Length: 252
Ligand SMILES: Nc1ncnc2c1ncn2[C@@H]1O[C@H](COP(=O)(O)OP(=O)(O)O)[C@@H](O)[C@H]1O
Ligand SMILES: [Mg+2]
Image 1: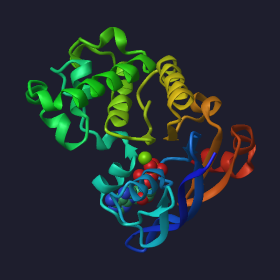
Image 2: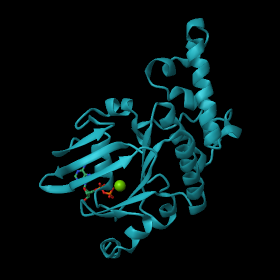
Image 3: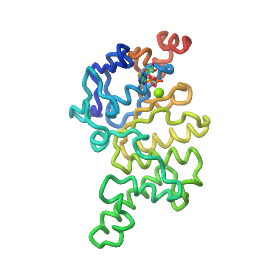
Image 4: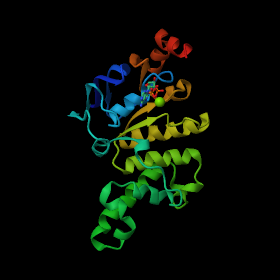
């Protein structure tokens, strides 16, 4: 597996307070990574630095060897590094398939219905529909392809959100607390589809999840943060037995 994302000595300050304090790590292509840590430890701020919402004061971020530090969000997304919430929320009156198609970047997506009648666009639209159908299959959403998004369950909407991130060209997906209010059963369902996307399409995932117990079994590698710093990393067992991680959670 080759390195896909590299974070090098990243610092992000709010005033004098370093919310992200000298973080370095790297992700390999096709890995499922978990970033854990108590509330307020800087997980979302780090994700915001990676995806271009914040510009870190110090450090560098490389995606596929390219220095993307300080790039604008849309440019980073175009490289294939996408955070799900950067994709607008589903259009509830559109069907599942239509929601996938409008997530296409720029040209084709915006005018998909119009462009369908144009002969010259036909080939690219047909391949877009094929791609969407393939993703819906892997996500287990084929049976709802023609249903308005408003009729989908909470779990199905989350899966649709991931599908739209992939449709937009995402190859590395950042999920910030993807299962926040979702019950553990649905959470397992979502992670099982994350595994399938990795196995079948080689997608890389960085998942931020506060509840260690539900996500640990799916991760290849876990990073633990506390007070802006990376306190340890390793397999789920290694990290969860680390006294520094135990202490940071107990102190919450
Ligand atoms: N836009 C902001 N302005 C000032 N402080 C912020 C901002 N965003 C986050 N913080 C602070 O930075 C710290 C880390 O927050 P955050 O990254 O949201 O943590 P987490 O996602 O791990 O819960 C917290 O102390 C939070 O209050
Ligand atoms: Mg957060």
